[in-house]
Image (cartoon, rainbow, N blue to C red):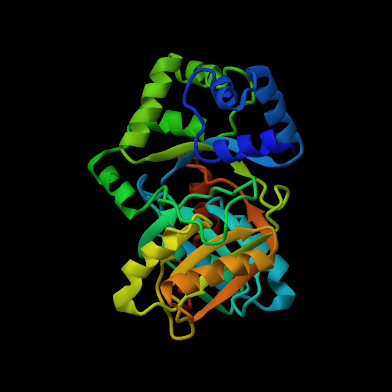
Length: 348
């Protein structure tokens, strides 16, 4: 990658243009032609730097139920347990981490499903020792934006891209059948060609302008956050992802959570529940080119907030990383296969 590639990658993570010829628009401030940007994007995908370009939707606003889940599994069975967990279509991320809770995964289910019952069933199938559901009690920030230029200092601050207050407006709206058609199309990888939205609009039966109006409506109603590129973090040079978990005094959680979210190098920041063996109530995700770089960021957060009781959890193996797909039959098919009505031992 050259410097223009890196500048292009910085922009498409947060500001992919919703116009008929987005690659021409992306190239303009960089002095690149549409043809050059398309060629660069294709090369970045072929080199497994860019994973995909697609719309990013708000799971909760669409009525889906989701959570981070921490699981303790016998180390001798961890690969088999991960395989079982990965079979659920709503599991998008699944990592082994350096902690007694050694499997951490994110899961989402449709509005008609029972999230706790699904997690309970996965707990049984994976033969986990303990499973903790780490619900989001408050969203302080979500939005991955890796600094490909290497110019961002550990303590850099920026206004969080997406917070709890940004999803509130979605409660006043319903998802229409047209919305679902648009979502099904936009959640797939966007083709790297001069007019990538043209074929999508034709499949739905819309003009390009009508498609952009439908997309803008999804954004305005809080269902869609943005169109963006998702990178292969490790191939892009970010070989470490550190989940900093903090024991913040309950009375200070909101104030300190917002401070932590203001760090530009924090991609996710949530308030989550505590358990007798888990005192950490604020989670921050940071990405770095090394563990040392992640630790520098977490140390900067600690210095600014004054919170010193924290630990860093690093992924030692990636078992699954994909995008969540909405409005498919895969969820019902999984439940039909794996959700018999049997008496269960509680997972949490």
